[in-house]
Length: 479
Image (tube, rainbow, N blue to C red; front, side, top):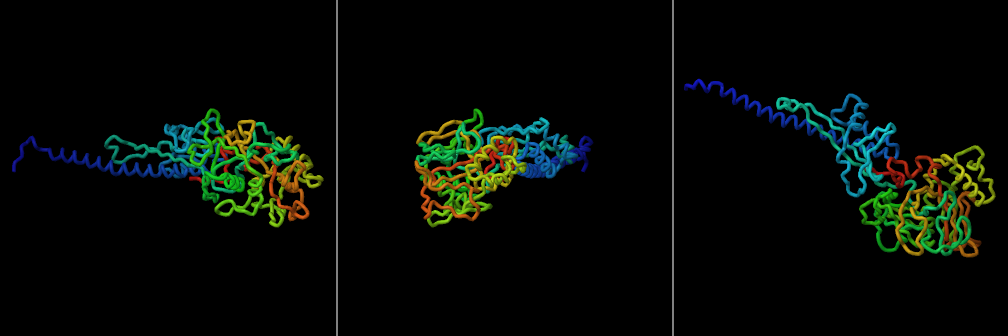
């Protein structure tokens, strides 16, 4: 066969075009595979980084940032030469999607700022319960893609950790204090059967300092979802083991959301509640259980010494470690625990504690206080008063540490049948309203010490995080 001269070299052109197409398909297959692999590695790095940062959630922003940077650097496929360089990449990183709302969040994510003033747009927190991490852009060198003019493929990834309660430790107690309550010894609960026995100043009508919050159901705490019906079951469980879901202080200009079972927004208001001393007594001292996993009454769940309370037959071994036993100074001052045992009465001990709390400027209590069933957090309202005899919402300004102290049983205008103050009598003693011992029908009132947060160590504080976060039941589950 003979070819025309003009057709010579046509095959070479077709071969060249075919090779270019083959190289293009190779670039698509191989280089895209490299890009997808880098993307998977980036996502794994973002997941590891956000979990590591969440574990530091109640430390300083610098500690959160350092953990995020370190873990992402260790897990990303193509890191910079050094961790310090990666930290600079984070400083220059921009996260345009961090303002996007996440289910259950009202406020947007707020970038963290370190002690030097560097703003980390790609490491941000929201509502005290979420941490978001977006990795800086990483670039993968191509192989065949260079033939097509594509030298690198850019990838990044983002992840969010939600911090959820996991039980144990200091918790939120369903009692509250008004805006104008001072520190030191306070009447944390009284009622129409109360008596004028300091710090309580006599009978009071109204809601008696109680709070009604739903039980949303928490497998880790053993609570069962209870949203309607008698508030006694909800109150008893909340007092015995603490709230089973997070609630939050109200931020300035933020919307208000009442704590209800089906409220998806972070609640910052709680219902007040009327009630009686039977509810209070059962949750604090009885032999009942209050959750599906058998949690006992609050004062029976203690690692410390106990005293026996005789309720005309039933014996309740109750926590007997007083607040002064957690004091750490050893200088013979009013805050030296060794000076309390010699005081003649519990009233004298309480007065000295008031003087100590009023004069102290720094940490005076040990971290062991978090293990006491008497220690927890109560909401302080933005409002100064309580509604009188009706249930209505009150707004949470913040949460403050309290130590539940004296219990006043069977009170009337003439006084109380039995007053139990921890530490007044030795461990193992038996107390009763008698002789003979009488039925403790009603826990008429209760006192508590409101403790300024600066006086307890960081591990026992409510606000230990970067965004006004809630230390909820002390330990957390990171998801």
